[in-house]
Amino acid sequence: MGDYADRVFAVVRQVPRGKVATYGQIARLIGTPRSARYVGYALRGNPSPGQDASDIPCHRVVFKDGRMASGFAFGGEEVQRSMLQEEGVAFDEEGRVLMDRFQWSGAPAAGEGEADGRVPLGPPPDFDWKVELGED
Image 1: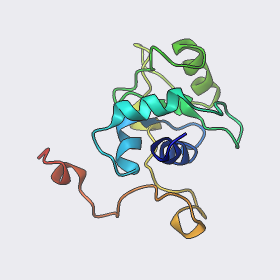
Image 2: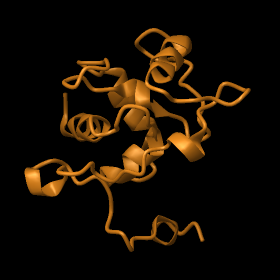
Image 3: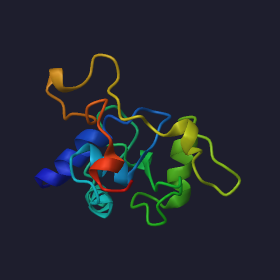
């Protein structure tokens, strides 16, 4: 695939079991804010979907309100929900991920990050996306 998709995959691989990220969050983390739709396109072409350590866990990417992608390319919405439940992710009565509890912070796990050659997993701690994007 291309460079954009490779950057998406590199970040999605960092989303830990039991956590989710949003399409927009992934876009921001790779330095392309406002390109959430393209993150979805890249994930649709995921060459290695699944839950094993070597896979790209695209099932962990959801909409910002916690909804599943109705067109989840690897089995549909119910398969995505089942995969997340298997990892311990909980849902509200409308079937949306409880984002306040299960959204990934974007911070690298201990021993991961730029120092070992991986894609940066977020902006500096004092970076304010709302100000940067003029949303204040």
